Length: 144
Image 1 (spheres, rainbow, N blue to C red):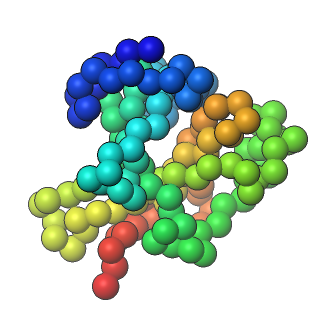
Image 2 (cartoon, helix red, strand yellow):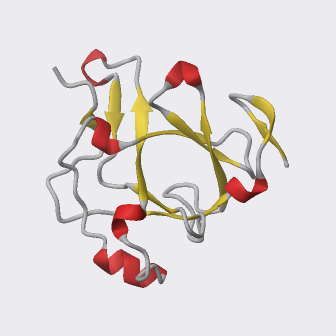
């Protein structure tokens, strides 16, 4: 399947790798289908590319690379999604990363309050919203 992207141009993707998010991502509720792309030049960042909108590509990253003690209570969410048969350790977790050139103190930040969870068994994806925590939406990834 061919997908048009702003960052990578027109690319061929394996349709079985398509991720579906039923409620959409925060701020992008109308877009339901994505693919996770890699670029060796930007590793460990991945790109969550909308299949429906070429200009929508979010930088995401594994939060455990920079915050090994990151934890979220998935039990209520798992039940809501019908994922109760999935071991939460099998879920793939990413956080949206923001790159800022204007603020040298916060060049790379991660939203720890809105992790993206992927069920690899079904290729379903959801963005969780965490409220009862000390995490922030602009966690500095490269803290000194």
